[in-house]
Length: 312
Image 1 (cartoon, rainbow, N blue to C red):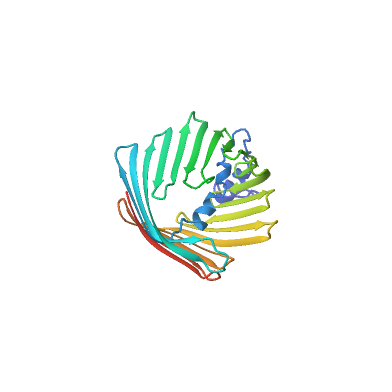
Image 2: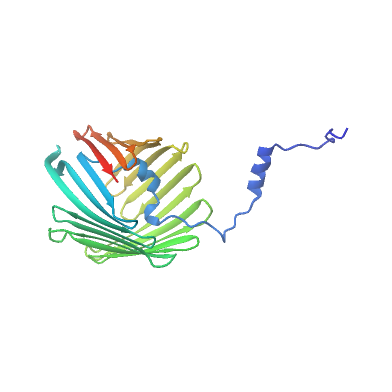
């Protein structure tokens, strides 16, 4: 009789008990997680929908001199699009060589690139403290009024992130992103371009769980951006985005996938303009990767195919 359930008593399954326990747990709003930077709220969707496609041949070689310093060499050969008033895309054959030097330390990162066409790119990332980071980007060219530079000051709080930007052309900007629940973050940004006498304000929201990421962004410049990423498994993700400009009435939507295998990674997408993209990265050996890139735009009759090798 000891095993007999008394009248009126009910047993709760283990799964339902765990769900009830989670529902009863109160959210500690004084101990929320720190959100990602405001400029990276769409990063999961961009990884799947915006791979770095290219056309022609690309070869990248990186040689590490020690644990912190390395040199890189990059050769690219392929057509380059030139501006044209006609509907057809006009391309001319080009070739470039790029030399780079990298210094990577836990608190300091220095990256420099120089190209045969005279362009010089430089990036600096310096962690002044555990919470404050300074970033700088610069590009110098031979063309007049085309060189630019930008400084970013990022502050990482306990449950928020803030950033202040300033660049040439009297460009100033600021952003703030705050966690309001364990899964939801809200924020906004403002900017002022003194050279063009333009200003703007924007708002963004990001909802993230273990299985999905949803983001929304709207700005006074007319831009509305929505994205959604569903993590089907540890290796497969499906993504979609929607871009709308309510001033120019331009609308673009796309869907894509990100498939990570043991030896390769495959990404692809198709958008509402009929443009299809595929990007394959396969690891042939330790430090040796083979890359295939393809982009087909039937409406513009523009077809791009490329392959490359990455060593190091």
